[in-house]
Amino acid sequence: MRLFLSTYVNKVDRKGRVSVPAPFRAVLSGQNSAGIVAFRSFKYPALDCSSLARVEEMAAQLETLPQFSEEFENLASLFADMRELPFDSEGRIMLPDHMLEFAGITESVAFVGQSTTFQIWEPAAHEAHQQAMRQAARDKKLTLPAARPAAPVPGSVQGSNP
Image 1: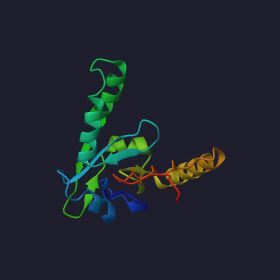
Image 2 (image 1 turned 135 degrees about the horizontal axis):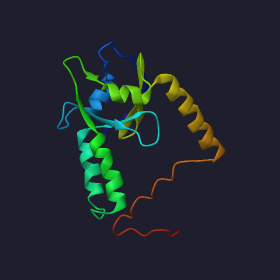
Image 3 (image 1 turned 120 degrees about the horizontal axis):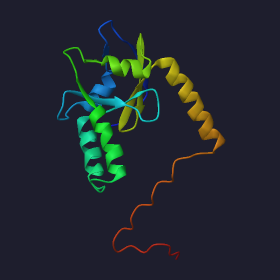
């Protein structure tokens, strides 16, 4: 599995185009779409972004919910907000005006890796958010769960000492 890692800040041109960082384009290469999918975050003044394949996984997860339930209807609304943003010949995308406005983006953007997805932020807003999240993690003493132990090898004896 290839992951979106690190944070990159790139300039937005006067037409709303921005170059997607080469490492992010490398993660996206080989997918069934030559671009990204972006939508306005439900939680932050940022854009949530991923590959089309990841969006297809999200759709499959949505389909596990009862179709006319409130949960289904609320979560399905995010698909109406999604936009496929194709790469141009220089690896740039054009961010729609409503997305630029939502995220407060004017001159530059921060591409923020988040494992299998990434976000696009106004850089100063992201820096403040990052500091707040790191402080919250320290205050709550958060940590990642321990790795699951490997499955026992068939035929081996676990937990015995000679």
